[in-house]
Amino acid sequence: MTSETEAIASGIRDELRALRDHIRHLHGGMVASADGMVIAHDLPDIEPDGLAALTAAAIGVAKRLTDATGQGGFEESLTRGSRGYIAAYAAGNRAVLTAVAGPETNVGRLHLQARRTAARIATLLDAPPGSSADQRAAIAD
Image (cartoon, rainbow, N blue to C red; front, side, top):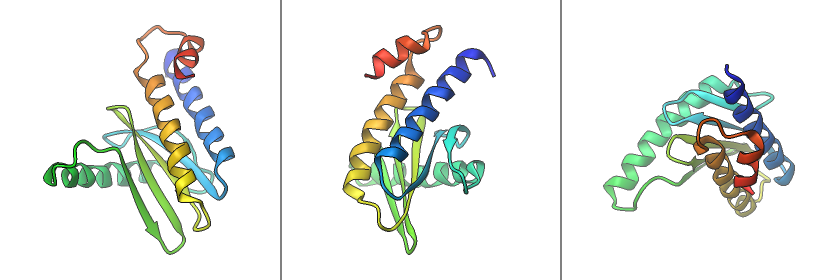
């Protein structure tokens, strides 16, 4: 991993930890490429590679669904299970933020904070090569 790549991954991990700090009952999060490769994660009890692959598959279906119904490009998806939520948010054109939350989570707050986090992550990932971490942080604010 290059120092540039590590700096981006470090910035993303900071964003994921901040998201967990802002959302009660959030178990953790992950950012992966649209094709299912883990970029960074904050998932203490979940295997990130498997989740990244499943997220890529789910997003593929969600994209086809939005295309087929004329609803525009994919932005987010929410799955509710008996033990909580899995939410996925587009983080630019090349990545997806996945959040895993408990059943007590305030879903409105999750959406609000995760959308903002996804936008900041997209900025980190889309920054021109050679940009310093400080420049990327300034862009994200």
